[in-house]
Image 1 (cartoon, rainbow, N blue to C red):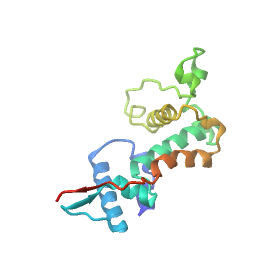
Image 2: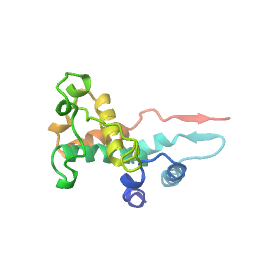
Image 3: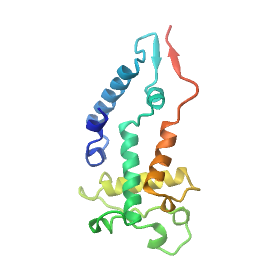
Length: 170
């Protein structure tokens, strides 16, 4: 099931749309069935808890991780030459000492076209990578291997919640 959901999801999953919401609902239903979670009017277990207990990434989290890894691979010169000009670090773009340049953020040019707009892989990767860096300011992804970064990104998304949230509607 996971391989079918994640196949080229970085390409088609950049936009927030009704079809992605339908996929999310189906993924939630599949996780409930696989984990034998109760789903009735009296007892309800949140889907987030089920994902974390089973250590499975939601589709949106998987796309977030792939976007961050794509930017990391390009900035560490691990992608083919066709991708060399996709990303520029803020510290390489200007000489000012801003928070973004100090934390290693990627410069995001303003683009309003369909091909290079806000929902392109490039723009989404920049936004996701910068979000990750703002949430983890002490981390320097450029000093990490791809495997270490992938583990570091996945860990907070998969940490098992010690207290299971059950809402009882009795």
